[in-house]
Picture 1 (cartoon, rainbow, N blue to C red):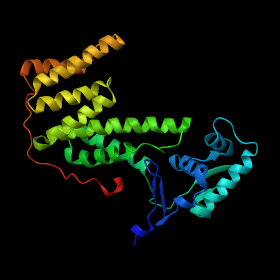
Picture 2 (picture 1 turned 30 degrees about the vertical axis):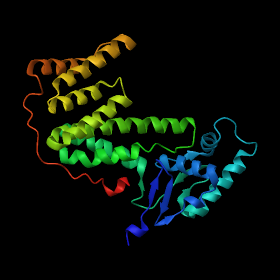
Picture 3 (picture 1 turned 90 degrees about the vertical axis):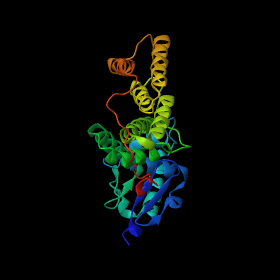
Length: 272
């Protein structure tokens, strides 16, 4: 019964708005109504001035009767979501039922938990949150819509995706055994998405070395070194240089014994 009454908002990928068990996205007032709802839902912890909402809806040129158009959209949102969902007149806030779940918030919270768990070496605690953050972030924020505020959200979501990939690969390296190929795959994706991100190369080097491919790990370092030199006139930082030196000395990552256990691979239900 509790699940039937849940409120779940998905702003990444296909827009979905379930309020107390009712799918209401089709009731939102057209494309602009969906955009207005996404703006309010993505920043629901504060009140928004009407001028701010008009600028978010019509960033280039507002219609002549912008106030009337906004009022019509707000009325449509109240009809779809319920009269109590929007609070205020001059300043408006979105009010959702207690326990409401929004995927943007879930991704942000999950990546922080994953990073903290990885820093502690808590691989079981890192696995689920990193995977959940990855699954949400890779969908992209409000595809098909364009605005400066949407671009800002997308950049934050891209950073969440990169951080989640890094935590996911780090977790798989820590677990070892059969998870090492997963670590390498995630690290390679991270490097492809962020070719100047040194932490991504560090994770890739560790994944390759843990699989016994020390030469490949050193080759990854050389790829980054050449890229930084040729394109930025820079060189890898001290952490990466220390990792290269360790690999050259030991022929691999010393003191690491692959674990044989694997974590559950099913994503948490809130990531669907």
